[in-house]
Structures are given as C-alpha cells and as structure tokens.
Length: 399
Ligand code: FEO
Image 1 (tube, helix red, strand yellow):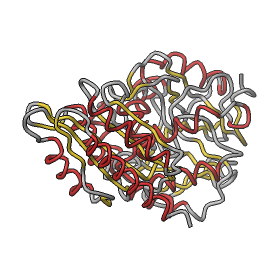
Image 2 (cartoon, rainbow, N blue to C red):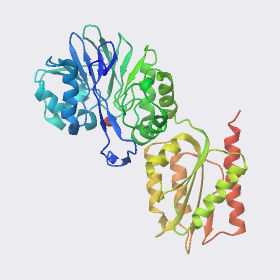
Image 3 (cartoon, rainbow, N blue to C red):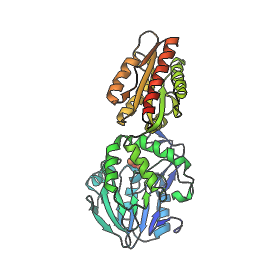
Image 4 (cartoon, helix red, strand yellow):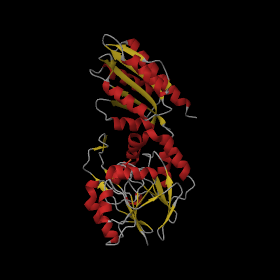
C-alpha cells in the first residue's frame, strides 16, 4: 500500500472515492462520481493536507495508517473548509489530539463554527513557511477559490502544489490516481462541468490566484478533486485560465423550453441555419430534459448563446428563467447572444428576456424573434436571420 500511494518524495495519496452521492452540493449530478482527495506527507515531520467527507472516515484512517502506521501526525494543513474536505477534521483531531491545525485567519473561525474544534494552531499569512524535513512548504492565500478561507500549499522541494478545489474535476479515481496511469477521456469535460457549476462565479479570484502562482516551478498538481496531475500540468492550468477569463470556442448553445413543440421548432430552424452557415459546434438543450449542470458546462465552452422561451403565466417559462438566473449568478462574460420566444394570447417571455440581455451585458447579435402560436413563413425567415447574424458574428473572430 505504501508504495502504491506514493506520489513523489514522501507525499502520498490518501483520498477516497464517492460513488454513492447523486448530487454534489445537493444540485449537481455525479454520473462518474467524485473523489475527495487528501494527501499525507510522511516526512521527518508528518503533515496531512485536507481531509475527506466524514462518511468515509474509517476507510480514510486505514489509508493513513497503512502509510505511517502508529506514527503521530504533527500538522493538519487546511487549504479549504468546505465539508467535503473538512468533514473528517473533528475525528482526525480526536484520533491525533496533539495535531496542530494549519490555516489562515479565516480558516479558524470556520473550524470552530463547523466543528467546535480548538487547540494548538499555526495561523499562516501569505508566503509563510513550514519545514517538514525533506519537504519545505510555502502557503499562498487564494481567497474565493472557492471560499474566502481557501489557500494553496506549495512544496518547494518537489514542486508539488496542493491546490484545494483549484484545478479540480468531477469523476472518481478508478484504480490509479496519477494522470499518467489512467484514461483521462472523461475528465476533460468533467473539469469544465465542475468549474462552471462550482467555481464559475469566481473568475477574477481564479485569475488572481493564477497570477500569484504563475512563477512557481510546478511539477505536480494535487487538487482536492480528480486526478493528480503530473504530465498534464500545463493543459490543466490552461483550461482553468481560459475558463476563468470566460474565453470560449466557436459554437452555439441553443437552450429552449417548449411545452407543445412550437418553440422547439423555432430552435430547430435556428440550428439548421447555423449549420448551413458553417457552424459545426451546435448544442441544443431542452431545459425540461437537460440538467442545468450540463447546460452551464456548454455555455462555458461556447461563445454563442441563443435562448428561447414560451410565455407561461405571463412570465418566462420557469425552467428557462431558472437557467438565466444561474448564468447571471456566475457573471458569465463575453458571449454573443440572441433570443426568441412564443406566446398564445399575450406575449411576455420575449419582453422579459430583454432584462436578461441587458443585465448579462452580452453582445446582442440581432433583434429577438417572437412568435404567436405556431410557425409561419415570416417566423422561419426571422429565425434564419437570427442564426445568420450569430454565425456572422462568430466567423468574424476566426482570423
Ligand atoms: Fe470541494 Fe469547495 O469544496
């Protein structure tokens, strides 16, 4: 076990996999599960970096003990206090009563608030240092990646960055935990979905953290979720950099609600014309079927966004409205935008979506299209016009 868990130097992987939870944070589906990663630095002085969800404590403790046996742990470094990582904190403190908690000023208020745990602590400030023997650790405060207390810990000896949620992704680690030893196919999309769902609002803090860490000779990224990145460090950093700048590739996400298929027909017409105009990345999402988690992932991927809604009780269709709120909450920037809608006897959805168009500050590519009851030749032409305007705007960016 000891050798199997080894990452580099005296650093071991002691995380766990959750294949039971349906919804992360009670909201986000986990088709491939999620890992809660913790790391044990079994040096002259032993340090544990973050813990795991409390439900996995017994398994977690077994993994720790399989590396260090009966040796005590001197330090618990708390990079992030969200309970998927701090959940076992109180139990670890009970098992290792002399353990010194390492965190920043914001951390310890949460430690007491969540767990009522006090005791010896090392309160670090940005740039503070901890010498474990072979490994020399430096702490970097990275607030709002993903909570105010979040920090990262860098091992200056071997270039290992313990990044908290930073560079994380959904998906359990089935067998190996090193990126060199697993098929990574599923993780790339799961990284975008994780980022857009969980961290998406915090683009500016992520950019600040990237700037702070920019000069470090990082060889390995140990996130709290997903694989340990060694060969793919540059790719992972570049994905987080692009997402946190809200940069996106050419393509259109077409999201619509539809009760009887009429608004869907408008969406199909727009999609067909986009294709005719040479746009290849076109993703249609029926809000009543696609989970917002996947829709947000695609909105973070693609530069074009077109939203359609029927009028419902004189409002935007509720599922569409809920999605628009989620987009605004994440402060997504820089999208090309179009919208359309329908009504039976009095139009409201299109009028109300104008609010979203304004608040989002997206670039409107054409006037909205509004349909009464069902498709007619004029509406076909207006939908096609909206699609052509979107395609033109996207194609301008090609050179
Ligand atoms: Fe994985 Fe913000 O906790």
